[in-house]
Amino acid sequence: DLGAVGGTAFYVEKTYEAKNPERSFAYKKKANREMIKCMVQDLKNRGTDPLEYFSKNQEKTQMILDLPAAKASELALQYQKNLDLYGQIATPKEGEKSAKELMDKTGTNKQGKEDEKR
Image (cartoon, rainbow, N blue to C red; front, side):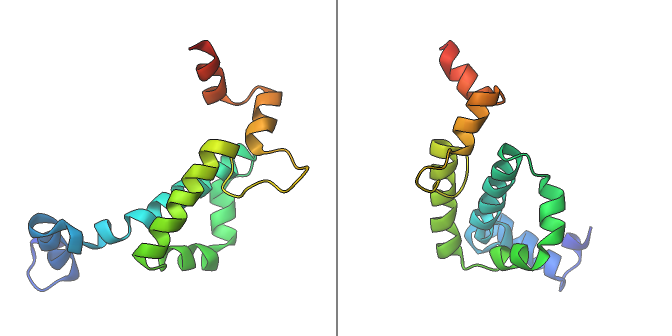
């Protein structure tokens, strides 16, 4: 475990996680990971393979991972809100059906069915 070897980046990260988690890389990049998580769910809702998408768009993915924490946090909240409302991260254009409506129509929206049961 390189986290136990002094002077390595892994040691510094492990020290930050133990003493001051807000300074750790993992804490700072949480919002970026949340954005990726929302994007994965959006792609799945639309029937696209997330692995294929991210491997084809590595530069865009890296740009998302490099976003400043404040901007990433703001976008992650917006993505999650749109995902909850529309089943996709972008607001549907006028006249366009949302991914959530399409999933309800085809019967692939598990969350919608669970809500109806309650």
